[in-house]
Image (cartoon, rainbow, N blue to C red):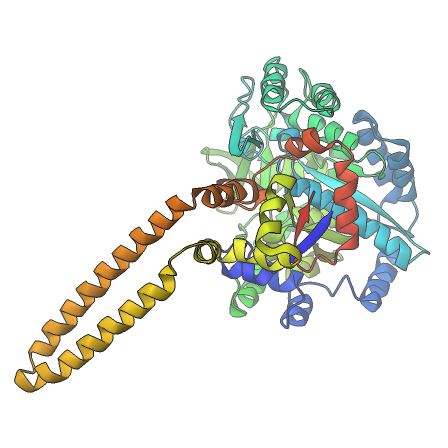
Length: 557
């Protein structure tokens, strides 16, 4: 692949496609050191910081044998490879650390960034093993199936021709507020798979892609199990471990966090609020808002209800009006923690109480909300992992890269940047280069002449009657407005004259910024696997392993 780069900071400034905190942290801007020390627990790229954290994690008390037994049981259900099972066994040793990432269990693996997060975690595990050979590092994918937002996981978007097409799956057996990971598929999922496959063009790779989807997404599987089986097939060579927190065995490993949250609330939230204030003081937006108690209650039907204290003796299950005694809930905390689900701000702390996590690989919004958690980690006595920004990519098919080759040749980096930041100027520049009339120059000259003429007129009219100056200013404004309108019409006429190039740029827009979003946040990987084969996963991994992750990568296929 030919690889170009686009500045995160410029992407943040133009269209706010990335949070400013993420862009500065990922690109190692001048503000990086302040961010790494104030909001996170050091720099994952600094070997001295890494060595110190490895030493602390090695000495920390983790229930490693129980963790390994639990992970073996789960991963065998999802067709784990022998390499994955070996990695799980390695976790029994205090010399083995986890490189963790995670995502909601989206349909057919969700958006492209789930693939990039996974590949980033695998790449970091390899990098740390190379740099610290006395330790082992295993990639772990946290399956976020406890979320009850069905809309987050129920649709998939691909390109059909050059048009983004979104398909939504409506599971008839689902119920409101049920954790999506527990939603089992009816026969309808198999019909949906066939409808989806029918949209993919014929290719040499389509039979293999179809087999993967049909074997993972079928009646009886859940959103979580199907996601895990598909991702296992895509990353079968990499020893990737999957973890579902919706399990009594897992939550017992972090029960002390559950207990402390209920016994001390709202103290942890106060710590998060204080840390969030520091983030805001540096000019960054906060992404997550803590609650006085940061847990949901999970009922016998798998539905999640937000907990809210009501006086000293009761809790209310929101948004219902049902109440429960505090004493009954404390009994659940101590004896049945699987009936509780941490919210977005407590989930990372539960994760890292159970796992010896060296690094968490985070997306742009995650980096921003992890910056709010440093004091909460200290409050719970949990080692905060390094936070590494995931690799970010845009895949460029040959039909698109040919356009940029014509535009920029060997200087395509600049053209890609111009496309993402100043698309209109790219268009006007191209139109001007192939136009018989230099519209920008022509209209700029005429506007200058109008201003000059009106200035001369103003000097004379002031001597006649000073009040006429205001009337002249109004007239000039109207003239310049009409001139601007004429300019826009002239450009539209030029666009029509060069309609072929305009159509090419629109095609680029549909492919690289589908629905106005970054490609990684809109499209599903299956579209690309169908056209370029399952080996594309390894090609993506190679790019991620060779890049520094300090810029958004534009990779030409």
